Amino acid sequence: MGKWFLLAATSISVVMPGTAHAQDVAAGETTFKLCQPCHSVGEEAKNRVGPALNGLEGRKAGTVDGFSYSDANKESGIVWSEASFKDYIKDPRAKIPGTKMIFPGVKDEQRATDLWAYLAQYKADGGKK
Image (cartoon, rainbow, N blue to C red):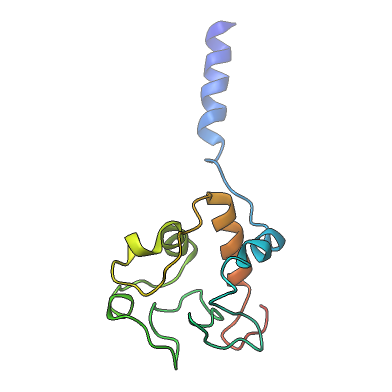
C-alpha cells in the first residue's frame, strides 16, 4: 500500500497546478485607494501627480499623453502586463531607478494581483471591458 500511495500522491502533485491567486476586483478597488492620491481611472480620469491608469494592459510605460515622465520611466522598456505590473508595484523605485514615483509599494502578492485585476478592467477610454 505504501508504494501505491506514494505513486498516487506523486501523480496528483504533478497534475495539480502551482499556487494560483484568484483575482478579486472589489479587493483591488480597495487597494487602489492607496494609489488615488496620485492616479485616477475611469471615464473622468485625468493625469494628476501620476498619470491616469486607463488602458494600462499592453501599454508601454511612459507613454500617457500629457504626462511628464522621468527619462528612467520612458526608457524602461516596460510593457504593462500582470507580471510586469506586479514586479514593478512591489518596489517601483527599485524596478525603475530614477522614477519620479515615490511609493513604498504593494508587497503582498494577493493585494497586487487584486489591484491588477481592478486596473486591467479599464479600457483606454475609461470604460470597463
